[in-house]
Length: 113
Length: 115
Image (cartoon, rainbow over all chains, first blue to last red; front, side, top):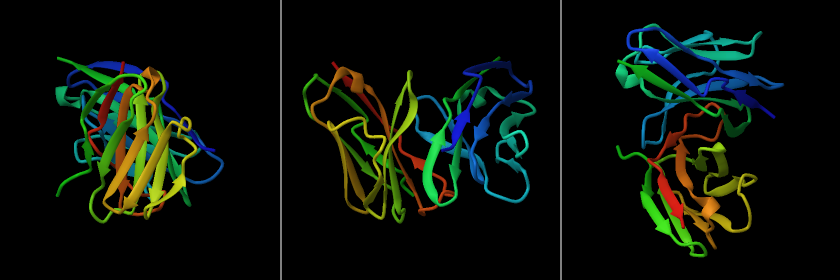
């Protein structure tokens, strides 16, 4: 079975500073990897996903994540955060042929003005 | 286009009462998921359906929980009898296909409080 680890439960960062949210997964087979974002009092929404091909994937609002198979990681980065990025971020993994997605415990990003 | 619709948005009930949560997935989506989110346990998958058929209900906590999907546009999650430990936010999500690559689209959630 696959699993996801998000070691940081909370990450405070000053506005316009860079940020990295860490995600590690374990699986014995090929995986698909996702980052979802949850704004206060809302449902989760997809930020970006890795399915195949280029290991670097980007979102429309400046986030990027890199799939690293050797380190079994899928860390999320943004070079300069904005107040509006304050939210909880969930890393998730699924494996081919089985639609069940396993979510991490989430990382709360707090952007400080 | 309308997203996933859940009702009610908030529910307060007393222990022992029956609770029914409702979900309307995005039109044309083939898969539907029910999740529960709590501070202690995070986001847990309760059950998911493909083409209205339950595929995996291993996350359903116990017999007090049941879920149905009578047609492609409607699903319910029922708790009977409810207990205080069922207090949580319950999310419904849908996806356009049935594969592991699919994005899930979440509703706004139902915040349940059992007194």
